[in-house]
Length: 267
Length: 279
Image 1 (cartoon, each protein chain N blue to C red):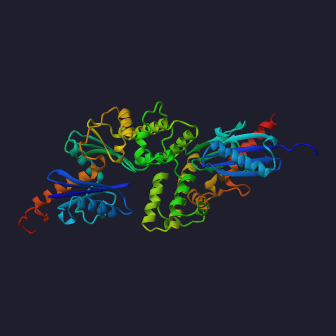
Image 2: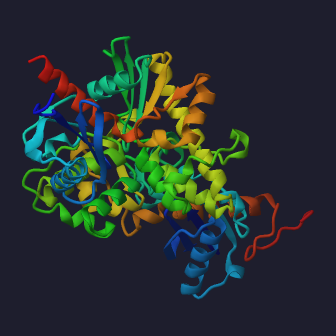
Image 3: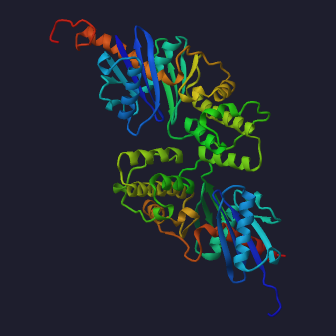
């Protein structure tokens, strides 16, 4: 098909702690970028978009469609289609794993559980938008307090009764509880394992409220934490899948690109 | 007769020394890692400033976190009882006490003698506690002590939509990103704090004679907002620092216990005449 322009789509997900962008083409994701939300959000979005189009080897003018989602979507400075975050997750997970029926997105601030059907349509969803317990932001605070890298938290897996007990749900009080444990001489590894268990329990409660059906797919930054995934599986008594073909944080941006593609194809 | 009350909180520890029915010295310090350390340090500081030593104490009651572990206290009493007692001593018309501490918020209702008749506490969620304000001060880039003044002259206070401490911090961050005036944000924070506290108060209801205690009582902007939301005027605690009410109550209980023990002849209390008996 010589001479035919390849159609590229830009998907941009402005989250609570990071901005994710993808350039999506006929063969899938061509490039992606994840940038921390430090400082002016519009500048962060511009930076992430410049990074991703440069990695893709295209220019902004060469992009066919642009779509945005996430809680900070209004900070995207260029014209774009706005897509609901819930819909983006559903479309992206269904695209990559058609057997998915429950999506558990564990983001920087908010955990969302979505029930989808065999076509990837959203049936029901719940978000933890009243309380920031068990979120990526808390994990970051915990990592600082324990002087363990967030990326290493996932490896700290211990049986429940060998882990430090985390009594509080609140992210703010949780930080104090961690400091207490540290002052009592509890090993940081045991505290980290206890935190993984605590997060696993609160996420499982949300999954049970919606009635999670397999296949259960976990997405979002916190899904990178294998300790939390394991804790959910143990408490829930069901397998929780993480998609190996994509970075767990990119589902929102991918979904935005796919939604935009659908709109274009529908004319 | 020297009676001492010692209160270890989540962020600060207080000691109060009373003699002849008046407070002769009190101290407030930031907590140390262990409650016993905090209790020892703050009590020692108060005694030293009063030119006394631990040997001069006739009876000491401890309250707050780890109150059972304080070695120099003869007994320990719950902070709720101590708060009620201390507030009522400061102003006998007090019947409802709103205590906003670093990590919890309590509403205590007392009778005319200062004994607790009802209470409710939030220690599960940081919203409506000192922690909420601490987090906001960080986001706004000011010291906690300067947060109250920031809201002066706010023309149109913002309305925060999230209760959660963390979620509303992000809400404020977005407002700052959008260039919203900081005074208006600070005023919105005061209001959010007041509304959260009023929800707790409504669970037990107000009886007139409302006092506010705890560290947050020193934030005049939050106090003002709370009075507006609750539609009450807080009664004065006189010269009593609102942060020491718990320790004050503990010291008053120390006096009461010492006198009761003495009357029963059960213990030897230094300074009181020893009664004959099985001693």
